[in-house]
Image (cartoon, rainbow, N blue to C red; front, side, top):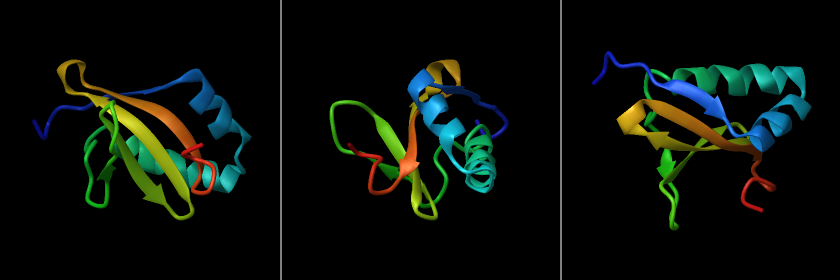
Length: 88
């Protein structure tokens, strides 16, 4: 499974939120999101409680919330936001 690469997809709202961020933050978050393609469950990732199987990874004061579809090798980015806004 280590050799399989996941496809990264964004929900439209997550992509809009990502594009509104400062370019330096976009670069940091973008590198982390790209790394999820080869390792969707890196160290430091947290599985969120709730009805849906969502995961959260921290990048400084920002959070990336995403789902993993192992059967079709997709990482779906649900939300990208500052930590005080991400769970609203």
